[in-house]
Length: 104
Image (cartoon, rainbow, N blue to C red; front, side, top):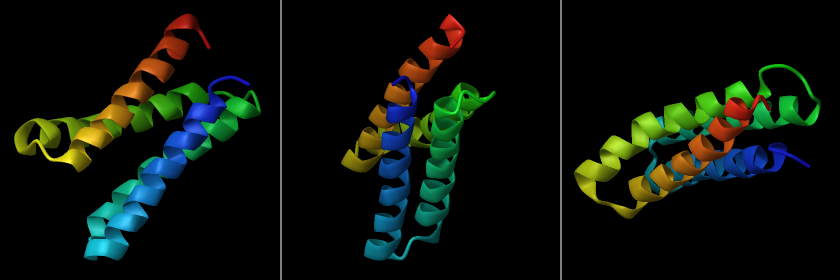
């Protein structure tokens, strides 16, 4: 068991959050962004699990995308949702950044 479990957990949280955002508010950008980032995490986790190339990179890309969209909003609005998403992004950046730096 390596980095696939965090990737799968982040996939479920981001995709589930996007779907929840759509159901609660009808926000189409929420579902698109949440499912897209969740798919990147899920695909990264799958590739890590099967020892295929670019798994860590896909999960790291998902973390960069999530951080790029959530951290500026968290700083600007100080609302709980962007702050939580920023926390998930930072966790992903730390986890997959270290794995990438170590050479997987």
